[in-house]
Amino acid sequence: MSGGDGGVRTYDGRVSSSSITASSRDVILKAARTLISDRGYDGMVISDLSALSGLPASSIYYHFGNKLGILTALLEQTFEDLHATFPSPSSFDDREPIERFELWYTAACRSLDERPEYLRLLLAVSIGSHAGEDAIRVLVRRIRDYAHQSWIDALTPLFAPITSPEDEAFLDQLAVLGRAMTDGLSVSTTFDGGTYVAHVPPFVALVRGLAAERRGLHS
Image 1: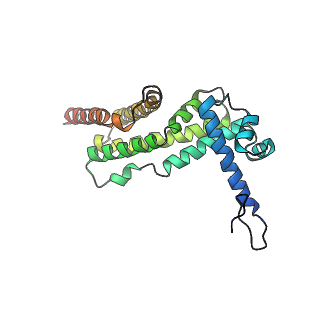
Image 2: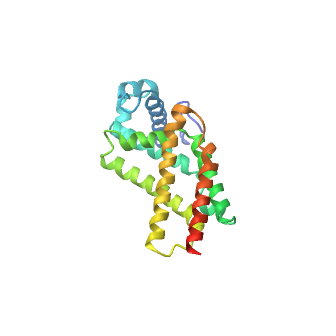
Image 3: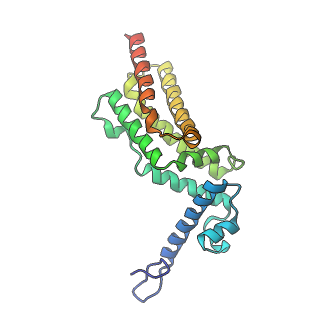
């Protein structure tokens, strides 16, 4: 049974504190997302966050400790929201390698088009004055490692067999290039418009050409 304050009422009419906690936290993060989008992280102040969320500063500090805690929680929430629907390369294992890669990359770009703030937030966090904080560094590293491994998984069938350190190094470099290109598109789409999906065909053509070239070298 719902209470008017957003909590869930128990059998004796009291409002469940766990429901209030979850609701308050989400409200604060939603307000923080709005403020950071408008003003950047440094432009977000607790008093404005309190006003926009309708919750006292004490509630904000209770949930997150400080501004850095808000930023860390917001980035983690955005990452989890995106990757809840983010495709795994293995989802397309029934396709030929180049089609598998193209389908994965297209689906990934569509996910990014639906959440344009994700990479912008990640980049802002990665290069901001707070980037050296342990909580931020660990979270960003986890996100980057996840992305890198997805690229490796998507590219490996195209360049298999991977039989030497040189092969592994080439694959790793191509995965880094793919991540770097996607990172850069977050800036390009911000200033120039367009979509991530629009850049799928030329990158797929590049990967196709590289795969054909390496097959020729190893034949």
